[in-house]
Length: 114
Length: 118
Image: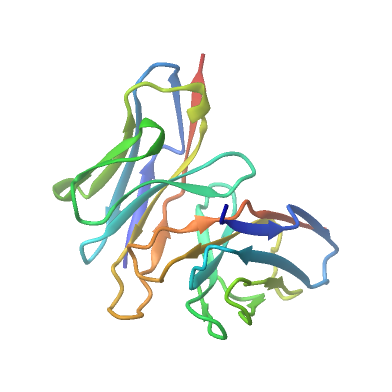
């Protein structure tokens, strides 16, 4: 079955360290997204990518970086510049970036930074 | 700019009772509307979507939602709640995008946690 795989499910890091979250999809979708979820705040868009080697900042991109070297993969790096990195991170994909394309989500990575 | 308001961060119902989760939106253009469900420590799953066809939309697991343009609402309902419906529900609105490859920005509501009592 096609889907989105995020790894690891839980991640613990010390403050000041960069950390990379993995996201792989086998749905053959062009568009991929990273969201951050905090309790009571819904989902906030970090970055999105329409095609390989192209990505755009979302609403809360500061302190994060991404790459899109392959269609299937869209890793997210949480850098030491992100002031409050502890959160639940969700990767998603869609056929296109037009508004009618529903998102397919992975099962998330819960990052804890101490 | 578009926005979504979900009325009630927590809703509690008895098993077998009607489920009603409220969603109001604002958008400067005819929107696309979605409901997603999230079970604990999992990603979101699409329940249903409105994309300018029928105003009453049927989704998975017996849920449905009605698009009411005059009320700018897209409330989610289910006639009879089941224990397995306990989860967090998100309403989301997107605009069509400017055309071609323009991004149709998706905005999520704050979420409503549904509790189902036996």
